[in-house]
Image 1 (tube, rainbow, N blue to C red):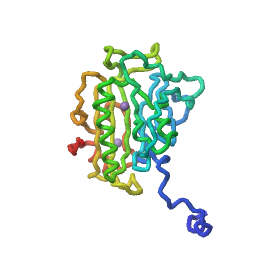
Image 2: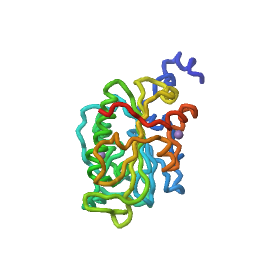
Image 3: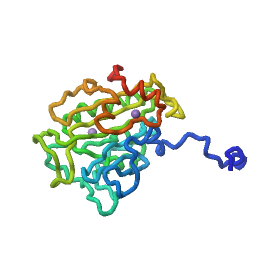
Image 4: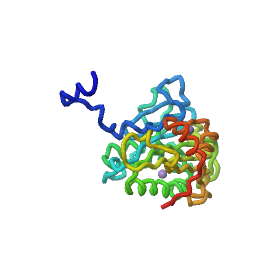
Length: 271
Ligand code: MN
Ligand code: MN
């Protein structure tokens, strides 16, 4: 039934802005992930707090995508309840809270705990191990932590963000030296960790508002504990990340805008 008719009965919802929980992939699904269990290296897991592509054989997400607006920010405390994700297909190995113990790698969040503080349930969801990768401590706590903080600063300044974080390659250097896998080979240590941040003034119809002048911050960092703590030194193009991963990022944005945006290295403020 057309919306105008439904509106007569005061029950029409279609003109409203989508719930923030539902639009994490508004700018596209980078790897065309689906819920087909026969594609275990590119398996789509959707949660209200974020959406990801999971790689069964690496035991980590390929990428995690989430929308960040002030609607997601509140006063819920950090839950720290790292745990296995029972949403994975039943026969697949589930990374455990203890899988990284003693490895020299942090349980690094993709969607950060501090981006999901509206409710206890939202914060707790970020501690599911499907949102976690082995991340060198100095990468996680310094380089990455500062970029995450800057994203929240942009949000509080009147913007809404679409953030995609992912990894590729094999082999990192943590606080106990180089490793390729953890947990008896069930979890791969990635060699590179990247992030793409799309910055829009808070508004509606987001994909259509991304134009050739929209600010995009793309970074690609080594998963090595001796990296530079200045995230801005790792700025790169979306095109370079697409070439390294084989993904099509921002595929819901017009091709003309992608062509310009994805070739540009951000030079904007960093704090
Ligand atoms: Mn972190
Ligand atoms: Mn693209």
